[in-house]
Image (cartoon, rainbow, N blue to C red):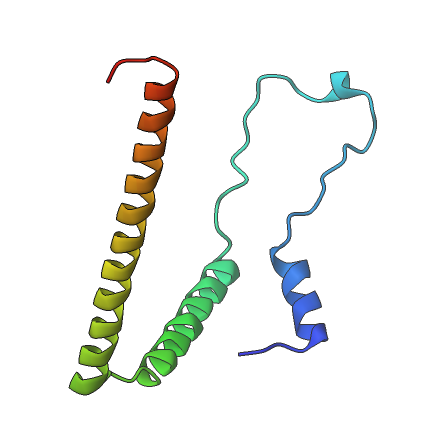
Length: 115
């Protein structure tokens, strides 16, 4: 689902982290050693999260309905293409490895190194 620019801006404002700056630069006036629990959920926020979860699951269900299972012929043809490609690359790498290996052995033999 594509959103309009205004929707993107609204989502950015909702989900982007906001920079928190101290009201003044004097940190000594703040109480030290006290921990406050600011993570407690607000009832409206919980209800909003539940609605978002429902919307998400409805979107997932809608997308899953669009999924089409490939036919047997499609699976067979793509499997054959994959196998042929794998064997072609295996043969290519074997050939290149053999040529390079023999070339390195020839250079080492020419330099007087033993096998």
